[in-house]
Image 1 (cartoon, rainbow, N blue to C red):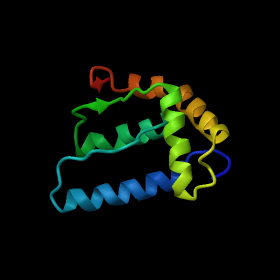
Image 2 (image 1 turned 60 degrees about the vertical axis):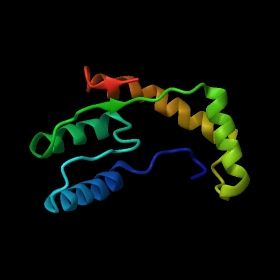
Image 3 (image 1 turned 90 degrees about the vertical axis):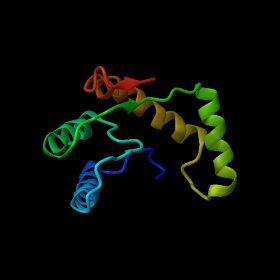
Amino acid sequence: MKTATLVPYSLVRTVLDSYLASRVQKGQTMFLLDGFPRSEEQTAFFQEIRKTNWQVISILHFYAPKPDLLARVLKRAETSGRVDDTAEVFAKRLAAHEAEIESVLGAFEGKVEN
């Protein structure tokens, strides 16, 4: 966690694929996926599995000023016990997010709600 990297894609794919398949099998037809997809690789996977399982109704993209986001992370650090709740790690995570988010949102053109 100190490196400010995302969870490995292979793990995300395995967990999400298994979870969604089990929910679809039980009849669930709607999902709210928080923070997914976050990368071009995850977007490609999501596009692949949704072709046969469901359609995207909307993508919610929230904006908040960087200082507000940092303040929230630092406040969380007071009680979370997480060693990665630092300004340095936050900056790395935000930079990684900003480097990929436009291509992710572009893959869902017409579906994005800001």
